[in-house]
Length: 70
Image (cartoon, rainbow, N blue to C red):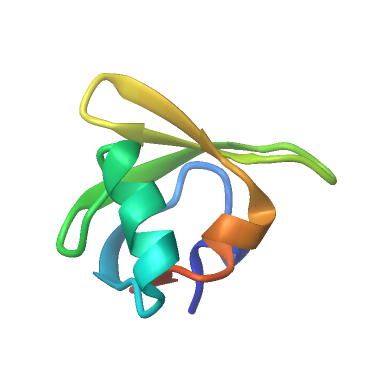
């Protein structure tokens, strides 16, 4: 399952970020493999808003589609 398919309120763990460019960008957002995030909002035709602890992060769909979660 990829990060762009999670539903609002769903918690998931980042399993893999296979692309090096995507991994570098995700690390800038504070997201790395093994992190647990909660989907706060899925904006139609827009970004996925995640919560990591008390921080909210908005990821574009293309970036989220490259991140594998469970």
